[in-house]
Length: 428
Picture (cartoon, rainbow, N blue to C red):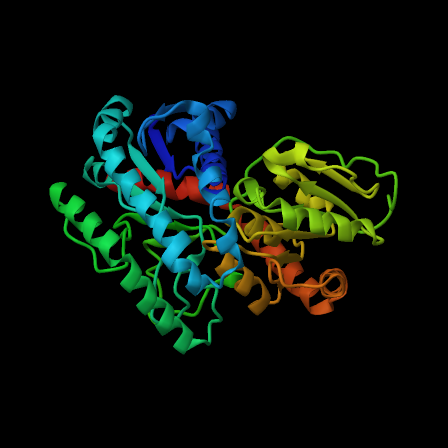
């Protein structure tokens, strides 16, 4: 096959962005070209990995530095809502999030058709939660990547997306769906009006995207997937079993205290690191224990002082290189952290705050790959007990060992790249 162009269009967050980087790396190893369509604030991320990147405005144009901070500022403005149950976040964080997401689709439609014409991609892969009509209408196969929780693809038998509910809480599922649809309806009506302007059919209330008729790539591994009332068509839905990118090597630094103690990695992701009070509380707790910890504090390193000798903080860590070397992880439930822990067989305590972190926190506990924890309502004794369980529980260890072996045998990056390339072979 002649060299083809594969365009990736992830949403403006590091999780989806870096997942797509991993797949794009595999596409190029197979002899094709990968390019990125990007929120202006993320263009340099893709260029840093050596890819061409084409900016498309997903909001009112603003300076690049401000654009890069848009979602971080958005999240920080909602920190008081992190204390609320997922169902009680619908009318504040979730509502405002969907307003911004709908606006992003409208803004993209202004420039996306001309950008696609300049790229002339043979396949387009979109990792987002909303339809961009120009992608669907361009005329080449388009693929939907679901890097968030698997329940982004709804089913009557599984918890609704963003709910953080148990698989068996059917009454809770019903209440969440009803409240979500009620709150979201005005935003959804506005989106359907936009779809009509683009000559697209309306979506049912609550739905903002559709399955690709070509291919849908699920980042989730088989071991944590839900039992659906209607199984997904294997010809159009493929599980990638994680999709771990290659990153720079990382050498564990020497700690001046507890250097032989169990090593914990703590990270709330690029967006959650603004919740500094919780991170400071965890650092103080770990400072009193036999453990040592590496803590990702994002852009807020200057806000920390008096760091214990068994804790090292940094603004960023290369997670795919670090996680294999730790004993357990405390994280926010973002899908990169979630799948990387499973891939490398590391137990996790998930302290979720928004979006699919709630679903992943419940899922890691229900499938015996770790534990969930309230983000704020915990005592030091309770947290230490959870850490010890993650370090010592034989069932968690057995489950993680099997899941890790399965995921590493699948090679999600290569699998995704082969599936994307096969679309062109089937079209030929």
